[in-house]
Amino acid sequence: MFENLFSKAGLSLERLRTFAEIVEAQGFTAAARGDPTRQSQISRQLRELEEYFGVELVSRGRGRFALTPAGKALHELVRSQFNALEDLRKTCDDQPVEISLGAGESLLQWLVLPRLARVREKLPKVVWTLQNLQTEEIVARLADGRTDLGILRSEAVPKSLRSVPLGKLEFALFVPKGLLDESSPSDIGKLLGQLPLAVLEGHSQLNEVLQDSARKTGVGLNVQLCCSSLTQVAEAVQKLGFAALLPTLAKQALAPAEVETRAFSPPKEKNRLLVLGWNPRHAAIRPMLQLATKELASLLKLS
Image 1 (spheres, rainbow, N blue to C red):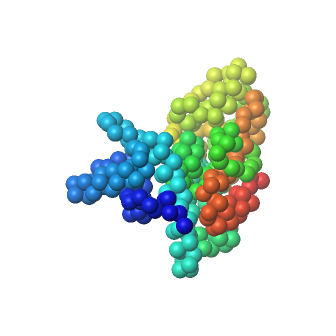
Image 2: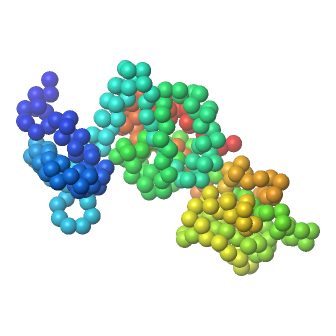
Image 3: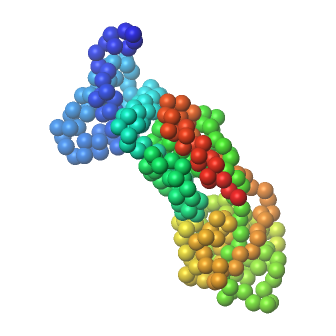
């Protein structure tokens, strides 16, 4: 059985593990952790693995660490198979299986963590690793197996991945009650022009929505604080007295006695459908990942 696979020297679990460590560390020096002897051993094991496959797995030369096409294919295969073997070993030993879930910080804080107790009740044999990742990172890590499941916008899911819808992300304008009085306009667009705003720095879908609304109403935006995350924006609303456009999920992080919520409909339809994504090739050999996918798809539904 598998005579061709084992007819040539050079393939071993240890060499495959070393290759995975090089990729995870993004280089030989980092993988060796400053140990010259270990770095020499790593280089030799990679060379032996390349001789076995007959191709380069890592691009040589100065600059950023990069895998060749064969290296990318091998890394995905190694990650998925090692994860499956690890799951099986732990299951046989009656130990919990580790599963990682990637999402943006605000979704982890406002969607995942509040429901994690119910998730753990359904999946007591799972240890969760929550990864704060941007959309591009989630897609890349789902592809090569560094992340098992991800929450992202539906438009960002490539054909190589699978997904199930969680629901549409709704927005609201959160305004500290001290900024409102009887003369405050009821029209959201006009109100935006009168409020000190906290926003995300740089380009974002929420900033686009704000700018579209301002253009439609013909008002200017009074942006007074730029933050690097939506959770920071929410803190600015609660503690610094700024108004902000946020997902309605942020309600649980803000005191209703101090902050008023105004319904907000974007002037232009944006893709706000969130999905739970995964790699079907990896899930096919990991029964616990299949079960976790099914449970999360139900428990993380947006109401």
